[in-house]
Image (cartoon, rainbow, N blue to C red):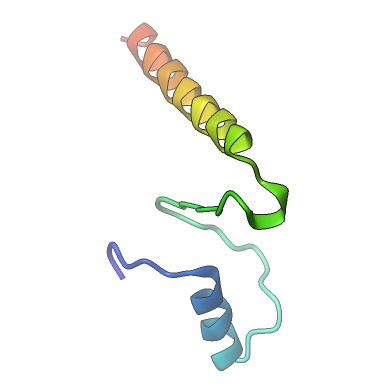
Length: 70
C-alpha cells in the first residue's frame, strides 16, 4: 500500500467488509493528510490559511530544534 491514497469512505468500507466493529490500541504510522473543502461545515478560507500557517510554523520550529541539537 505504499503511496496509496485512501479516503475515509474507503477505510470505512474496508472495515465494514471485514466486519470490524471496534479498534483497540491502534497505531497509525506514516503521513496522514486531511483535506477539507472550504464550504464544509463552516470552514472558511481564513481558517484554512491559519491551519497552513500553524503547520509551517511547527515545521520551522522543528528544524530549529534539530539545528540546536547538533
